[in-house]
Length: 263
Image (cartoon, rainbow, N blue to C red; front, side, top):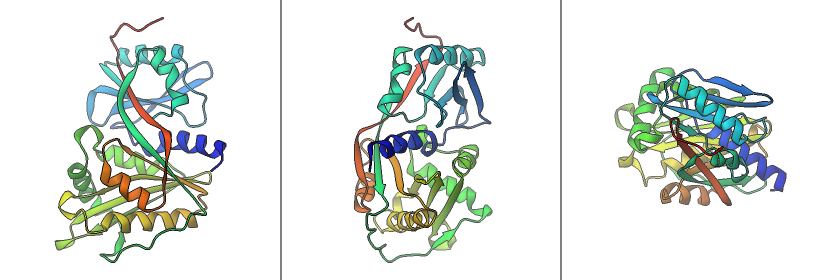
């Protein structure tokens, strides 16, 4: 992957891979700088703040402006989207600190895909299975990372085209799901989860291969995904599929709105 494509993968992954909002997002503006903001999941005391993918990196002055604007709305803390190293500087200068470190992995289109292991069919997720999808998400992720219904809607609407697929277990209960998205010739594995009791049976591999094949048909030249530090199972899954790690990774930053920040 070229350096330009890698930067695009970092920016696209940070802007699209992390579905943040629990309510309708708004856009904060100062001069030519813009960022998307809203409630983090259903926690009314915490706001998210994410630079728009087509904008320049946030300056410290704009980050301070956003903190004040969100404090005025009653938020006590602000968390950012997943940021590449070049995107973090303005936030750090405004007093933000690392909340979570993430692996960023990328897959180039020419890389051959391994065959999916045998297993249950990967199915289209009908609207009545959305509750099952959220139950899987709650079982697979810690509270900080769990999706609510609004977050699920945003994940599905964050890219020009998106694909939600599930695998079913006994009683036609959802045991795993994946969301993949494509925009501007780039692909994103936005969410992939399997309930703990069904892990180790190849369901994640089947869901991932289904999504990657779809992304290639959609014209994605590169695919990006991020995952938490310490999530060895997810890291092994993406490496099995041919993804390689970007050594810079990504970070989610956070700050208290009432904290004294440097000028």
